[in-house]
Length: 476
Image 1 (cartoon, one colour):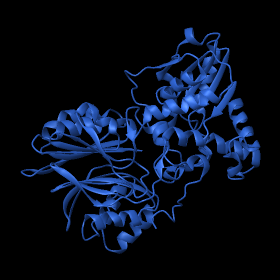
Image 2 (spheres, helix red, strand yellow):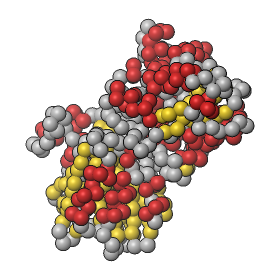
Image 3 (cartoon, helix red, strand yellow):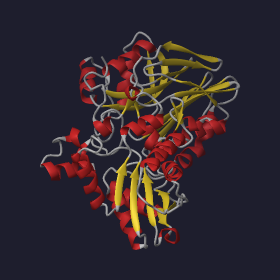
Image 4 (cartoon, helix red, strand yellow):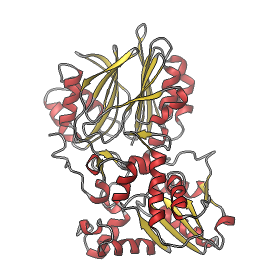
């Protein structure tokens, strides 16, 4: 997915806050990271590193002394190399984005037809952040240029610009990804994840709205484009992506996960001895389930973090499956002879869970039940970089629909309706294939209730395909 962070201060150098603030987004990506600062005396300094073989801190710590100035931006990216430095009629600026550009080829062709040059990666692909930059500099000012991005990009794009006159923060036109401003004495910060604020002394000051553009200087900020009235923020932020201490639209991630678990725990009639989690994102739900179901919470799995602290690493799926297995260590003393119920954020392919249930049974668990924080994933995400999946057949649900219907795309809407005959048959088949004694998913209504926003302001497309905005309609 990716995350961005920026900071600007009246007097103190920004590098410490920038370094740690960006690092607090490391759970959002594993491929690349970058920092850029601006000094009125020395100009811009930028550095970009690959994260595929090491961690953010180990790559950037040795060169922190090279960064100068009171303002800077940083990015953790699962896609392109960033930040980019641009020199244009708007002035010099650096830019970072959290974006998914579905019409990248069409934009590239249009820019090339206007005699604008495009650099390429060694793979031959165009850098999407460069496309965004070129769309911006076609405007007479930054607002017009960013609005050009909103009109042109099909997918989503949230961005942060470091200029010679402060920072400019712009949230995706439908607010699919979050952006918030933090404040402390003498400084401001902008972050995808508000979890970056607390230990650096910032307090949440403002949630930037969909399509809103804000100019931030050391002594304050001003809204230079008002937010759009409609929003479709990704509901999966609370379910999976978000760090437990982060807050989106006023709703804390951990509180939402607790409430999701409580709702399911109160409704569930299954008799179990304890509630456990698949760490880390299943913990909040499992604690809530234990409360709602009136059973104890136990650590059936413990996560071994000294050598594998990040869940997204590495990129290769086969290796990721192995790493996932190696870092989750079961506690046989808690499992043996027990009817254990595990909570997890989602089931995508089902590969890792298949291995886990086999292991749990082999260790003596009498029954293994699974409760999932979200509804079944039935659609790939066209709006943000949800996963590395290249095909909807990567989803276990679509493979089962193919086996039932002869076509993975047939009758999908019926399978997305909770408790329909098709839905119940699909869930039963998933439970059978994963060797579970029972399997239940949260209802969309429960997710909406736990988040506390109106359904029309949440994107639940991956569950029911119901996003109010198609790719063609999105930028109208």
